[in-house]
Image (tube, rainbow, N blue to C red; front, side):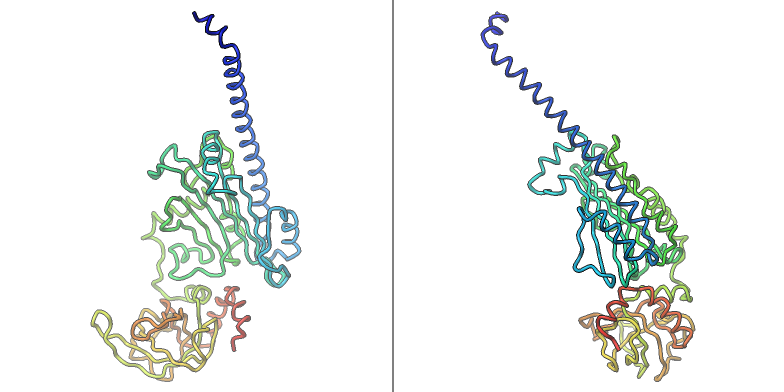
Length: 394
């Protein structure tokens, strides 16, 4: 009976046999292409990372950056016009899964089943006045959680980034009081992702920058999947974990010394010199009296575009708002006193008309030495300097 069946349907069995061989061949070819593509992508990513790391902030020139731009012009784009005064170049390397994430979900499934590691790398380089002031490198990796690291039941994004910043928005992270020119951390509210980051100013030690910009790009090709941030940025993750574990032992902003004030000069959004006009007592939100000072802006030091010269503001101040040669009590602050104010100006008034938020340690008795210290910090915030020049602040 069996021979009769075979002889009766010879074409069907040959079709099934050849079909199975063809399907297997397509599967193996697809798997090979995926892994070859990933090897090529990793090689390019490693070269791109090496090029970005080779440009030392505040030292590399526009001509140095142009060499990198030319090498990656097929994968990059300029943000606006590029000239020595200002130029930003961005390079994106990615595989096909990232090129059509919505309609191509089936590609993600095929890629995962065949051992793929869908990845995207983005690098940026920024030049101002003929010098490289900005650079960054980021890796996004789609992971299918076979080992279920965080309870995820579907794919999630594994992310690592290292980028330069002009300033760190207050309140400063814990590590900033140990190493004022860089911070490491992990973002909050990261749903469907695991991430770690390093941020550094152009004044960070170049050795620190090199260390913070280390990425494990074998995650793009290795057999064992990278599942957690420590796999993709091991050094940064280890430092972030140490700081988080030793949070209570890290310095806090208790003493408003010269180092903290200089750092706040860099990091505060706004700065100016104010003159005290009057002081009054006012009930706070908890019913306890607070001291409110009416001050007039005498000189802009940094931004402060929402405060007109000569205009007054009401500031509720507390003793821990003062830095350096602080008065022992608020009653010692007399009309006519002058202070350097580090603050954030809100576009809309907050309750009771207090539309200026003062940084901790952000009220500094005026003196030439204190002004020089604050200006030294302000000078490091190159983005604010560019904004001030654009607004032609007096």
